[in-house]
Image 1: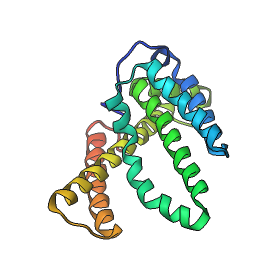
Image 2 (image 1 turned 45 degrees about the vertical axis):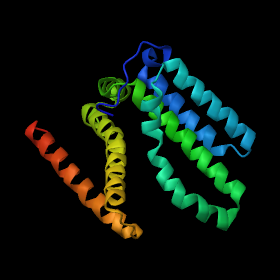
Image 3 (image 1 turned 135 degrees about the vertical axis):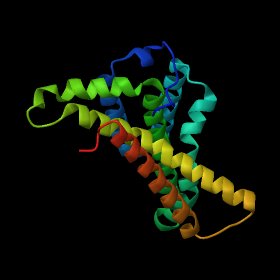
Image 4 (image 1 turned 90 degrees about the vertical axis):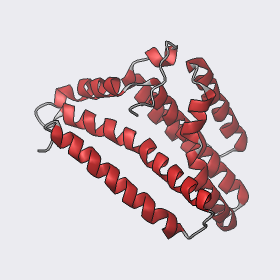
Length: 197
C-alpha cells in the first residue's frame, strides 16, 4: 500500500476510510454470489465507473489488476475441465472484479488513513486490544499483497529473459525465498523502530 496511493481529490478519495472498508467488504461479498454473466458484467461496469470517478490513471489500475491474470492462466483451464467453462469464466470474472475493488481502495486510501480508521474502530475495545498494533498489522498486510505480487512478476520476467520454462516449483522456490528476505528486512525495520515486543 505504501507507494501505491494515487493522489486525488475525487469523492472516492475523500470518502471516510471506514465507509470505504465497509463498502469494499459488501462489494466483495456481492460479487462472490453473482451467478449470471450479465450480473457480473454490470458489476464490472460499476467498478470501471468508480475508477473513472476516482480519476485513477489506467496504467496504475492495470498494474494492480494484471498480476492476478497469471494465476488465472493456470486456474481457469483446470476449473473449466472440472466444472465447465461457464463456471470457470464466472470464477475468473468474480476474482478480477474483487481484486479491482481492493485495488481501488488501495489506490485511493493512504496508510495513515487506514491506521486512523482502525484506531477509531477499536478504541472502545482498548482494554482488550492494542488498536495501534492492529492498525499497523492491517496496513502491513495490505502492503504485503502487492509486494508479493511484484516479487512474482519479477521472477516471471527473469525466467522469461533467460528463456527458461520450468515447473510450478521452479517458480515457487524463488518467490518464497525472496518473500522471506523481504519479510526479514521488514522485521529488522520494525525492530529498529522499537516494535519488537
